[in-house]
Image 1 (cartoon, rainbow, N blue to C red):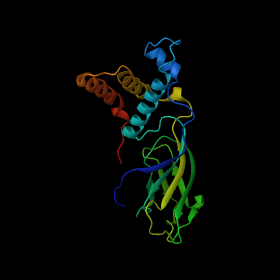
Image 2: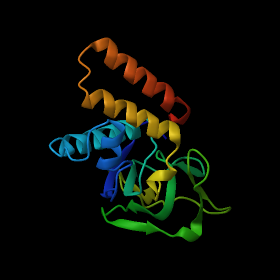
Image 3: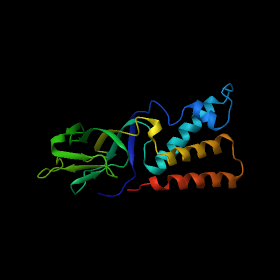
Image 4: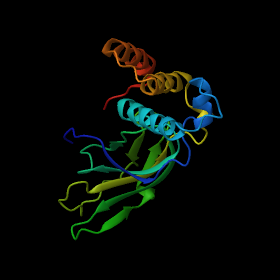
Length: 195
């Protein structure tokens, strides 16, 4: 299968963030009685999480999503591009008439622990042959991310904190911004995975 960009859609967004606004205000030393910047702090939390997720392919908090592929692999293993997978849903494909059809789970097994997570054909089974010639014809439905924000690895939480702080305090010197993001990058490095 040709290499392509990771394509996915969020079906149900995270119901909570990695930090609450109050937790981040405490970290930033903003008095709890000052509420004028709460929306800005929340935007910084969301922005830092999304940047970290894009950079590492690690979804931070529980999010239901659909990941798309143009075709089934030529081998027996379909590799997912995001982690950690919390709950597997189903594997679907667009048939020749353009209708999504569920690929029976009796044909494959899931490995949701390895990185990358894998969908593997069982012995004697094969991928469907009636797949239509459509972009994003294969859809893997699953949830990824931690169900408990406190279980997100410490270095990733620290990287987010550094990015949020740099954003909130409007580090205007390019060297200060570069230093903050270099430090955040070093914290993320062990978690960066590329397909």
